[in-house]
Length: 337
Image 1 (tube, rainbow, N blue to C red):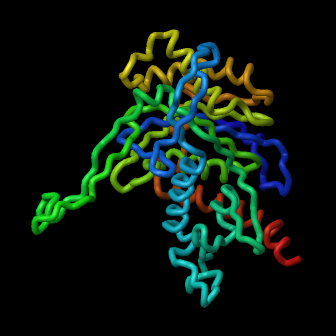
Image 2: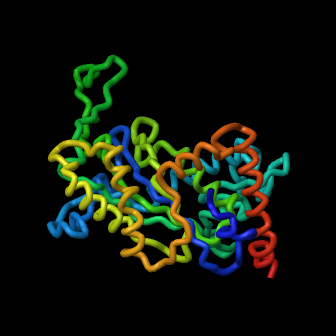
Image 3: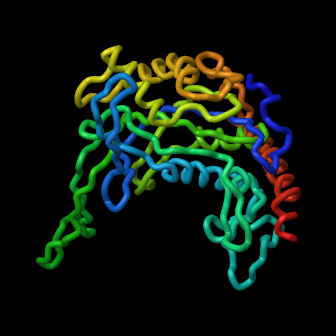
């Protein structure tokens, strides 16, 4: 259902203006931690595009969104034996393992050729760098910080279950703010000049990722509701404007109640309905296709990568073929000079 002519047959060496936008509504399913220096990240901004009052909103910085999605993709690459599961040995300096799979050690030694490296980019000092073709930005909560967070007192008891041992009380007690469940964060992920296989690789990472923020082994579960896919010749509106427009719509519908979570289905319907007008008024790009609603649901249901292991393997193989072709044509060639 996506126009195949919009995606290049090979990743070009210079920007060609083939943009594909993944519009999401991120919903926390448990208490989450999006923090810097021990405090939740917040921003003081206007409540809406028409609602002029100021509001303090919770924020999710860009790397707190893309890093978990990137790691989920790398997990799949190892599962399908595209990259090695071994760590890079600084003494051996071997680029591949014994089976011939590239060793791609995240933030240590990138292989510079797998789908992860080519789509999300890498930097290896003097050895080379590749700019990311996946763009992201800070996401803002629809509701205010005051009603979207909760403070908890945390402790670490001894094995006996008590906080004391041999008459000495432990000091392992801490207070931490958490983002409440069902807090909504509209977000746009933009890809530029990716082949269709690499775009679906990124989309698959987004749909599969379920944990974000700190302490992901204990909390941070999140659902990424796909609202729309937009094909255009440039970037569309920002995350902040998307959030403010949704706030205005929900406010008009009396769907925002103090200290109460917003119904996710109400927010999803409102966001889908406001998109055509918002994209026309807030972005300067020419929209060639907007996939949403029942068409989007049918599109997702028909994706082979969501139906079977064979479909997933076909996607990973196609994405690897395209990333390797880019590496051989431009990255490897550049390194030999």
